[in-house]
Structure formats: structure tokens, C-alpha cells
Image (cartoon, rainbow, N blue to C red; front, side, top):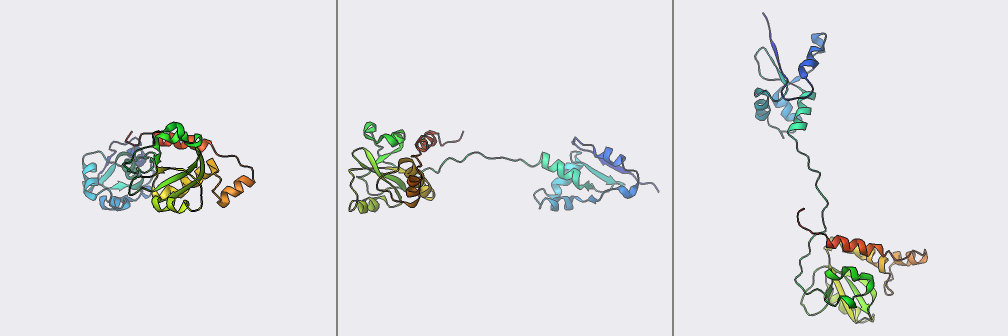
Length: 230
């Protein structure tokens, strides 16, 4: 009785038939897998029926024994599936979350303290509205920033400052709630206001670290980037 082995290389750069021809003894034959076993190797992401369909159409590398169902060598099937059926998308940089706030932005650019003037197109004057978004804010006295803070309840926070700090203007920058503390810290180190007494600022001053003025420019560039789809 004679048996026939049919090799279907499929659309594959590394010939499976050449690999099998190079084997000198039947005992060197690799393990063959069914379509179901190949599907299981991919956690069912590629179905058994799809694997059979690709094999029977001559696309997916396989072998048949004496007219039986397609069988697969794992390394050839795996590499073909990864290269032809899997699409990898690396994604792209996620711009900061959008904060929706329908308020009037500060229009008096020339009176905004020089240290944050680059942010002028994104700053709002405090006052005159019932509620505010999560924000970092700047207490200002005579066009100089004397304190930087952050709050999700801006109205009550500013009211509390009135009892202990001298200032005559408040500007705020809406910002995602989960990023408030990180931005506040960076701005404090960039401006080093007189009323901020955080330990990290005291240490920076003690170590002679100068204000991180470049941080404001980086923030301005980030804010000016379009947030839509590229």
C-alpha cells in the first residue's frame, strides 16, 4: 500500500517543503498539529474553521497525509499567522485629557505676570461664575505670582486664601484632576512663589536650584498642540 504526503507551502517565504525534504529519516519528522490545536495555541483568536479555510485555499502552510485533513508544523503555521493575520498598532502619544470649560479667557495679556505669559491663551480670570473645573491656580499681587496651588473646588479654596495671603488677582488653568498634583509641583519649582512652603521647594532653594523656567515653555508648547486626530 502506498501513502502520499502532500505539502502545501502556501504564501510563505520560508519553504516548508524544502525543510521536509532536508530530513534524512522519518523519525526526524516534526510533530504535526490539527487546525483545532493551532487555534488553541492562539487562544482561539484564530478559529479552527478559519485555519482550515486558509489551508484548503493553499494560503496557510500545511501538509496532508494520504488525502486526510490539513496538518500543520507549529513553527511555520505560527510565523505565517503572526506575519499575515496579526496587525500591530504602536499607538501614538496621548495628549492631556480635554477639560471642557465654557468661560472667558483672560484678555489682558500684558498684565499677566511675565513668568506665565506664554500660557496667556489658556488662562482664565477667577470670579463671576458659580462653578469651576479642576485647575491649577495662581495668586497674583501687583503682577507677581505669590502662590501656586491646585484644587477641584476652586471657589472655596480661593476664599480660604483670603484670610492669610495678600493678593489682588487670581488666574487659573483648567487641568485633568488626576494630573493636578504633578503639574502643581512643576509650576512651583518653575516660579518659586513666596507663599509656597512645600518641603521640595525649600530643599530646592537650599540646594541653590534655580527656577525651572524652561518648564513653562514646554507646557505652553504642549497646550498649543492641536488635540484632535493627526
